[in-house]
Image (cartoon, rainbow, N blue to C red; front, top):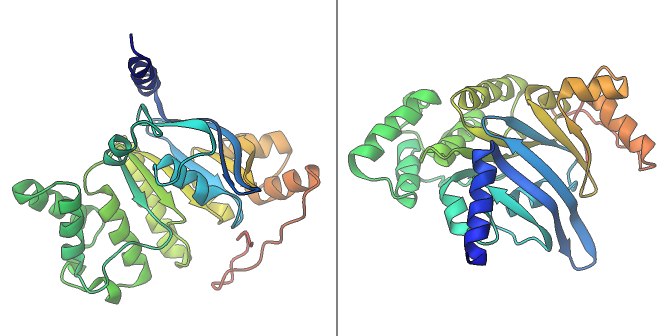
Length: 277
């Protein structure tokens, strides 16, 4: 059996074993700077998995490696049972990616944006029309279908970006800081959408710097300076560290590691529990 066959079989075994995403000592360096250092994770199928940490912790770099947009310096990553380094194109067909800066066309309507992304994913004709109506209904975007993307409230731009990412019904969604900058009500509503997707069987990996959003995840990995410094369910992490909140867990971990103490400034809406850079 060829080496490539061995890799394919091993990757398929990971998928069949329930691992939607798996990394083994995944590392990314930029010159002498280590952005992600030896990260090992296993995300189960149908799980809402959060990456929590301040800006610069390595969350976006990690998610870009998992999407095949950035090559690792060392280690390996498997997504949907595929080795990202060997099967990047196949991986990208099986995932949806919502970046920090919503990749929308401001001069196109909601419907035109979705139609464009449908074409990118190879969905056309009746299947596209059917899927477009499903997405508009699921995300409550129907009343805005003829609105230009640039004119949407931020919370609905966020929904449209999610709609573009999930139009082709991928089994895995990567959402990078999807709720950044929106008000608390819109954030809560968006997390309701996330949980409905998970209940339908989609795996979601979500990065955030909002402390309270960690409570909405099945499990979280807390990152700092490119490393995972804690991993587990929010309840388990709070119990292990004798804390009442994930914010307390985070600060306790940093103090215990001898790192600098992060401040948690208030967001523009007046909330605390937002990790600063």
